[in-house]
Image 1: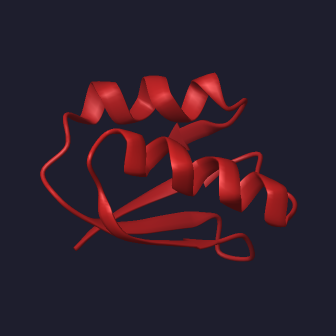
Image 2: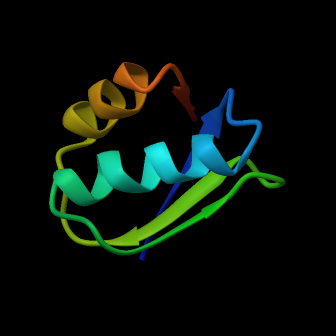
Length: 63
């Protein structure tokens, strides 16, 4: 399972947008936790593509 930390999510709509963006890249079993500011998923995704997809939703992947 991959865990990424995301800055800027504030509501369930944000979580849904993040989940859909990751699923569009091929991620499975996506779980988004707004309180922790993170997303967990299965699948081997290109880290750069993940950052771009999250940025397109208006959020930022942080290390």
